[in-house]
Amino acid sequence: MYDTDSFFTLSVAQQGGLLLLSFALFCVWLAASWLLSRGRRLGLRLLIGLVLFVLFVWLSPQIYYQYYRLIIDGLPAQFVIGWPRGAVHIAELLLFQAEENLSAHGQGLLGWALLVTAGWRNQRG
Image 1 (cartoon, rainbow, N blue to C red):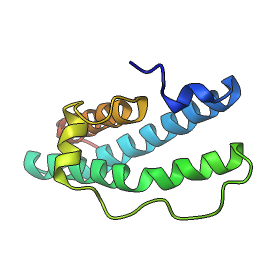
Image 2: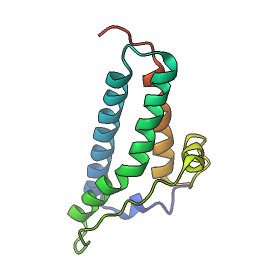
Image 3: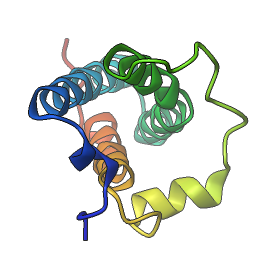
């Protein structure tokens, strides 16, 4: 399924860097979900998780592009994000019905992790 994924065109060191960046972003977004939803009602907590997921899907391509600029010579400095793709795309990511690549599936996993983290009853703290 992932044989043609661009991740596999990178060297082992570049793959490792990409995995480290992805793990760091995952941790930051989960922490934000936990902290922002703490002490709120369930509906608002889930909304916070969803909004954080939408923000990640919308803004993270710029972060990843900056990483690619570090590892690939000649990539120009530019904005790669545009308008958000919409609710259908978010639903497709959460249902693992978007593109069949590591990025889309990783985003789907992050989305569910954000919703679970935000929905978790974390009243203390």
